Image 1 (cartoon, rainbow, N blue to C red):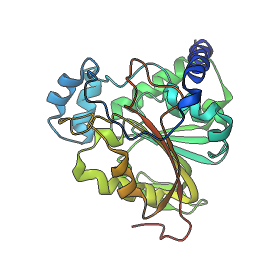
Image 2: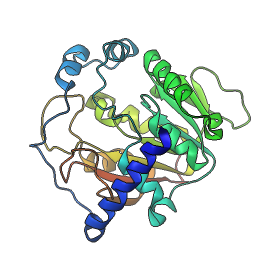
Image 3: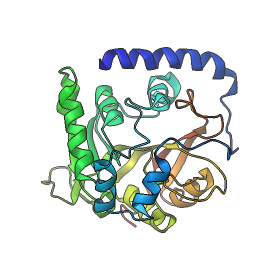
Image 4: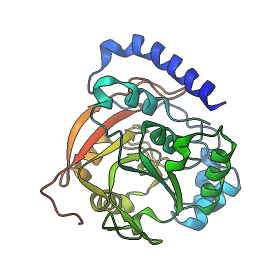
Length: 273
């Protein structure tokens, strides 16, 4: 089942590569006309601006997960498979996916060779991720996946050889951010940047799929995001290594809604803000 889905994504990637190979340029354009996925308005009504374990757990129990496409994001698959972009990202070490949902992207990173910690504030999301992984064909990569119900913003770094607790973790070589930043009200943006600064090793990478870029479109989640906002938040502790539209767009997404950013944690900054 999983192999077939991955093969389908790879086929889409090959098609996308042919159509986008001449347009791998940085884009700051925004689309404001794209319609939101079904279920978004109900999700917004349920959350009512809150970001808590209770609110997101209620969303999962109500089946309001409009970001869930049933597989790893095509943009992530294409980025990892691309020779040039893949070389910027580690193939071993520790990775984290905050706001992991059902764990599709976490599983893909584990297949790459990383030991992956999937984190979600919702206990129900973690339960659903375990169910999904258990339903997949046996794979050694699954032994490299740890699922945690935790508040990412409360996580504190500990030494690599220290025992991890409910709110502690060894630092990571790679973090992947997608449908996490865009789920946060602007009041949490500073905490978002501070958490990555604390938890990514100097020299480690942050891979961000920046979505949805929709200008001043109000409301959320998903809140409209701006690549310039990522730069404001991350530049003090990270160096931008790559910014461009993805090689393959997400399903049914208009051009200009997404960008890929790869950031390297600076070695000469404090390990925590």
